Length: 124
Image 1 (tube, rainbow, N blue to C red):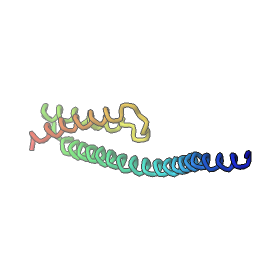
Image 2 (cartoon, one colour):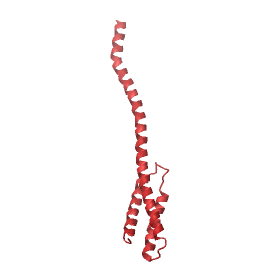
Image 3 (cartoon, rainbow, N blue to C red):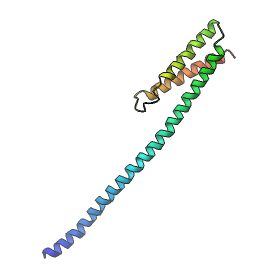
Image 4 (cartoon, one colour):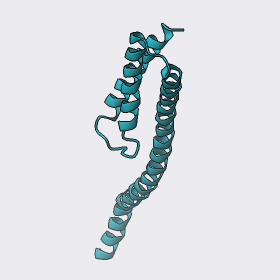
């Protein structure tokens, strides 16, 4: 009777054992795929942010060169706004993806860019 009890226990416990093994294997595979997908997602969004910031920087440098020889008071104000944007871009933490205020600083740069764009569009 004890032998037949062991056979039934192994049959009943097989379901639990297979469930546990399947869960473990699925978890390991999912973790691996999650890391890969996370890396791809981060690379894509990091590249987008870098491209956006680079565009703002190029715009600011171009206008700084154009306004360099101008000496009117309006141009002086424009230069200050441009210098502010360039400073914000230079202080942006490109190397630190864990920076807490990354999106907040990016929003500030976007706002400053809009201000610069409005200033320089008035002169042309």
